[in-house]
Every structure is written in structure tokens, then in C-alpha cells.
Length: 487
Ligand code: NBP
Image (cartoon, rainbow, N blue to C red; front, side, top):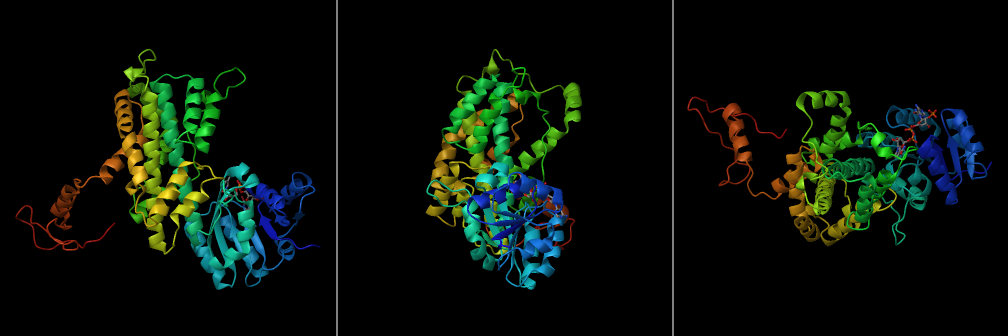
């Protein structure tokens, strides 16, 4: 029996398509799936005539591989990954490599890298983005874990990855431990944000301006040829154009209650742990949560009355150029979202000792993945100009971009508030932008309040940082202070 170049466990949608992609690039793949019927179906169907070897047990799969063995797991994230790793450990030899390509939590990848490393085995935890189509024809791949494993998997992962225009693969080593899955988590958080800023534009166009679906579709198509050139804007235009069998817009028949699988939530939770703002993604996650309270919203609309109703005739008096203002609000909010995402990656890199190349990460997302967009080239350029850039909002290109968008952005938030149309992403991004560029915020009052009721102490503007003071605000307090710490 010929030896296979790589093994793959988990023949659901992602696994099957990655196997076919590997075959396209000349690799022989041994496959195993817990439910054998799925393996048989795959071998008799899409994998017929391809360099794919079916196996019925994990032992058979391991026996079919060339050393050092490379085994990719494409199973449901969580306990299933640990269960398979435990099955594999006794069957593998030192130097063999397990690659987890599912949407695993980054701390699980840190733990798995360590556990397998202790047994002389090598672990890679890699984010893979692009869904079914990406997996088949070129996803974005974000590998991290044990650096010693990378040279053994680099060729195959870069071969199957999407490529940017000059042929550079959207796959490169991200960093040790959980760096790959962390980057994928932030990618998914940003994806939530991108979807929400587009959804708010649609809501303003439909409920505020009373635009027809063809009008909205052509607006998104026009935007997709400019600064907002991206996959998500393109598919939004397609969705707006789609009609059902009655000739009605398919979109309007879809229940407005959004689902989620958790990676946006993880991003926000980790931003809270690290003390870095991911306000736009948080609003995007909460917007889905609020939308899911569908029955309560229907009741509340009856009790409280809906937000002010649009008048299609007057279009709120918003004017013909309001669509351009929505464009600017979307673009500026997107800049804030990515600025926050890269600030979070920076904080995580420092916290975990990952030496992340932010410009390269932007290029990993340039093709193949859901957030692919021309805009990512501007981000790479910003980090090329200044590799340690603390925030995209400090780069000249983005400073100019956000300043140009500022009037339209404020106009949209203002008009939406007056009309009762929620724009949580645009307004929270604007609040962050205004806070971030404020030399003075009212946090002095918060510190005074904390010191007043809890003797939490404060620092002074006229004294060096790190010196703490307490005031006896009422004249009746004692001199004892509370310990100082960051929550
Ligand atoms: P699913 O996430 O639906 O997982 C199904 C696969 O996991 C099947 O092969 C199933 O085997 C296997 N599996 C399960 Br469930 N529990 C198992 C266990 N205890 N032991 C062995 N195998 C087990 O598949 P998917 O949608 O292809 O996604 C695979 C991974 O890629 C996930 O982590 C997902 O989050 C990630 N991902 C998915 C997408 C996407 O667009 N779908 C995109 C990017 C990343 P069975 O056939 O025997 O039930």
C-alpha cells in the first residue's frame, strides 16, 4: 500500500473540501471519519478517482502515513479534538505532527501544544477561514503551535491556501502556542463587526431612505468597486438582488433573529481580560443577541411604540447625498473596528510572548477568508511604515481617511438617533474615536468617586505616575486606603 503524505480526520464539509484541495496539489491523503458511512460516501462520491485513501480506524490511518506523520483534525471544536488526540497519542512516534484545523479556543491550543510537546509530539493549532468554498479552492490559514512542526507542514498548507495577486500564500507561521487560533478568533470577531456595519447601512437605506432592493444592491455594488471592495459587500449586493419564486426579495422573508457560534463572544471576553477595547465587535455581538429577543421586541414595539416611522416621501429630509454619508459612516466604523482588532492582537502578543507580524496577518486575511478586502493592503502598508504602530488610528493614511469620513459619520449617527433607527456599531465606533483622541476624559471624577466611597486612591496630574493619594472627602474618614490593583 502506498504511503499517504498526510492524514485527515473528520469528513464533514470542511474536511472533505480540504482533502480535495490537497489532491488538486498532488498530495495523497489518507482519511478517517468516526462514522464510516461518511467515509464510504466520500470515497464513492467526490473523492472517486482522486489520490484519497480511505481508512476505517485511527490505527489504519496512522499506519498509512509517511514519517514524520502529519494528521489534520477537522472535527467539531472542543471535546472531540481532545478525544481524538488521546486516541492518536499511543499510536504516534516522536516528531509526528497533529494539526487541529477547527475553530478551537486558543487556550486549548496552548494546552495541547504543551501536552503533545511533553510526549515528543508536535502540535499545530491553525485557524482556517473561508467556509466550504475556501476549503475547496484556497482558504486563509493561520497556523500556530510548535514552531518545530512548521517546516514539515509549510509546503502543504501554503500549497492549498489562497494566494494574493503576486502569488504570496495567505498562510504563514503566526506564532507559538495559541497564536494561530487567537488570530482566527480576532478574524471572526472582526467578521461580526464587518457584518454589523453593513447591516446598519442596509437598515438605514431601507427603513430610513425607503430605498428599493435593486437600488440598495446597486449602491453596494458601487461601494464594492471603491474603498469598501470586499467579499462581504459583494455578497450583500447579491443577497439584495435575490428574489424568490414570487419575485419578492428573498431577504425580506428571513426572520430577523441572528444566530452565532461563539467566536465573536470569545473575542470580546478576551478583550475584557486584557483590558483592551473591542467596542464595535461587542456591539455587533450584542446586536445579534438583541435581535434574537424577537418575541420581546414584538411586544415592546406594541407597548413602547417603534422608533419614529420613516416617511418614504420625505425620506426624513435626509437628502440625496445621505447614501454617501452612510458610506463614510461604514468606512470610518470599519477603520475603528480593525484598529481595535489589531490593538487587541498587539496586547495578546505582549501578554503571551508571541512575536506577531501584524502586516503579514493582514495579508493572511487578504484572500480566501470571509473578511477578505482590498482595505487589508492599506493595513499592511501602515504596519510596513511603522512595524510597532500602536494603533491604525495613528497612521497618516487612516488619520486622513477617518478625518474625511468624519462629517458624514456624525451626520448619520445624529440622523439615526433622531429617527429611532439603531446604529450601535456606528455610534459606539464614533464614541471610541472621540474618546481615543481626547486629551481629557472624565475619569478623574470616576477616580474621585472610587476614592470617596472605597478609599481606592488616585494618581495626580502634577505628580509622577505610580504615586497614589487618598483624600478624606468628608472629614470623617480614617487614613486607611484600599489596595491598588487593576480589575
Ligand atoms: P463540524 O464542526 O460539523 O464537525 C463534524 C465532524 O466532527 C464530523 O466529521 C464528525 O464525525 C466529527 N466528530 C464529532 Br462532531 N465528534 C467527534 C468525536 N468525538 N470523535 C471523532 N469525530 C467527531 O464540521 P465542519 O463544519 O466541517 O467543521 C470542522 C471544523 O472546522 C470545526 O471546528 C469548525 O468550527 C471549523 N470551521 C468550519 C467552517 C465552516 O464553514 N463549516 C469554517 C471554518 C472553520 P461524524 O461524521 O462521525 O459525526
